[in-house]
Amino acid sequence: MLDFAAGIEAKNYGLRKTTDLRTLLESLKIVLPFVVIAGAFSFHVWVRSQNVQFGYQSQQLTAQAEELKQVQQQLILEEQTLKDPEWLEKVVSENLDMVLLKPSQIIPVPFEKWNKTEPLALGASLKSSEPKKPSAFN
Image (cartoon, rainbow, N blue to C red; front, top):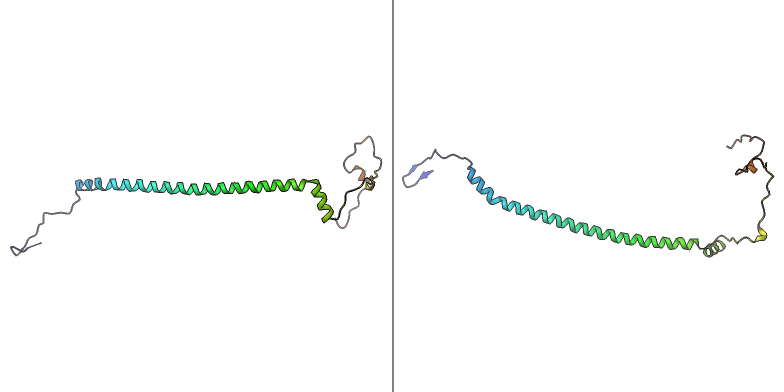
């Protein structure tokens, strides 16, 4: 440092750069409330944004649930329509060229007499006593 009045350079070797604890605490007392307020404000903004996001998601899910209920009602109606005998007869007669059987068209299926001591199993009348020969195509 230069003293212009005396024209001599004055040096002060007694000053040192040290951190004063009291100054640091006072700075902390001043800055800490602002940090706490900023943190609380940031938390409040985050909570509000999450709340809005959940609101949009809830609204979207409610709309999707309504759409699924409508689809379910349409499927129930379609199921009832497909089960209707009159509709089924109409489709079969128009598209497949089929008609209902008349009682005179029913032909009873003849079957062989079975052994009354053994119960009749499914396909028992179709079995023969001869062993089946292996086929080249099996």
